[in-house]
Every structure is written in C-alpha cells, then in structure tokens.
Image 1 (cartoon, helix red, strand yellow):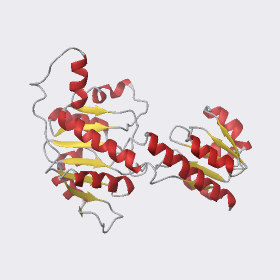
Image 2: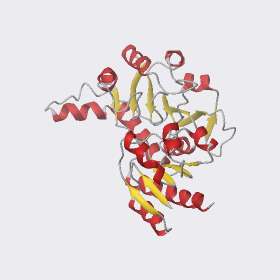
Image 3: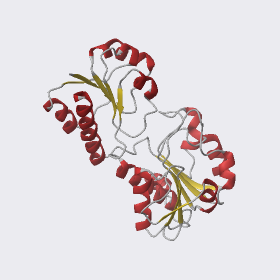
Length: 302
C-alpha cells in the first residue's frame, strides 16, 4: 500500500514501513498540494505541522489509516475520520521521557535564571548580584495537572530531586508512585511549582486563567510543555508582572510560530522559552518513528 509521510519520521521507522512491503513517500506539502495528492494514498503519517481536517479526509478516498507521530491529536479531525471508517493512531508513550526532561529543565532554568543570565553574559555583562536569589527544587512541592505518561515521567524525576509531588487528574484514581492525588483547587493552592501535562480541548477552553492564578501560591513557578491554549497567555503575563507567578517555562503557545502580539510574554525576563521542542530528542523521535510505523503496519493488515 502507499503511505504518505508529510512531517518526517525517523529513518528506522520509514525503513520498517518499506520492509513491510509498503511504498513510502516522504514529502512536505502545502495544504493545497495535500488536497490534490491525498487521494493516491492508503495511509498518511503526520506530526504537528500537517492538518488533517474534513476536506483532506474527504479527498482521501483510499485512506484507511491516519497516523500521528506524537501524543496530541488536535491537528486531526478524529471523530470525522473514524466516522468514515479510518483508523486514527498516535504514539502516546514514545516521547514521554523527552517532554518530561524538558519540563524539569524549565524548572531549573526558571529557578536559577539560566535563560536570562546566559544571554546577559554573552553581552559582556556580569550579573552575579542580580541573579543571586535563585531557589532550590529540593524540598519544594511540585503540582502536576495530568498524570498520564508524561506526567508520570515528570513525577519520577521530581521525586528523584527530593520534591514532594501532588497531582490532579480527573481520570486517574490511584497511582503506584509516591504521588498524592488531590482536587484541582488543592493542587493550585499547595504547589510551589505547577507543571501542565494535559490536552487542550477546544470545546472546554483554557485550563489556567486568571481565576486559577488567583488560587495559586504567591511566587509559584509555572511550566507548560503540554499544549498551547491550555494557559491564557495574557493572564499569565499579568500574573508575572504582578509577582503572583515568580517565573515560567514555556514550550507551547497559543499561536505557533509566535507572533509580535506575544512578544511581551516571550521576552519577559522571568520567562524561559523553547520553540515547541518537547518531543524533539534523537531518542524520542527514534521511538516515535518505530512505534507509529509498527502501529500503521498492523492497522493496514486489518
């Protein structure tokens, strides 16, 4: 069968598909080109860049499988695809370690001014006094919103650093980790650090708004390596400016790539930023490529 890969997967993943007897085409396509060409393919594999909406699904008359190399499925009209008998697959666990490690990296950066002191020293400055009041993670309480694969990996690393870990997850009722499950409001009230590992559900809107910031400890550190839109960026900026939020680490944004309208948040001295690279490690992408290839192969067999 013929498989289109638009956003790239690991060489090992592409080879697995070919070894299974499939014709594999790797090509970056514009939305217009995708509409014109999708009718030729039995399966498509995307990451976050390519959008597989109803028009693409309708144009893909031969489509049997849509694969997403990653966790979120917000760039795919899942319900519509499934109503057409098309299997929609993702790789929920393959990049968990990569994202968890970035979340912890942002905790360190936001705690010890790594992001801003690095920039200033490259300008020839010596800002030792300005950044001498960092804080330790050890002994602090990490609140997690979401205790799925990524949340669990983040919890493991936080526990290893000597943090107390509490979590809110409406689905998880018990855990084998040394993590205390609590209500949303209790996590907000007790967390010194709050790390988000939840999906963005358009119908429900943002999870963290001005109302939630008001319930947090003064001086909380917020990390978002989940999804853009989970946090209202304007409300976060207000909380940073007021001191309610001491600092933040952000990998995902309401608009990607970011726009001039987001410059106030991106350039804030108490914000550590990365360009949506949570899953982008050599190891993580290797696992993603192999897992999505294996799942697509199995789905096409059936």
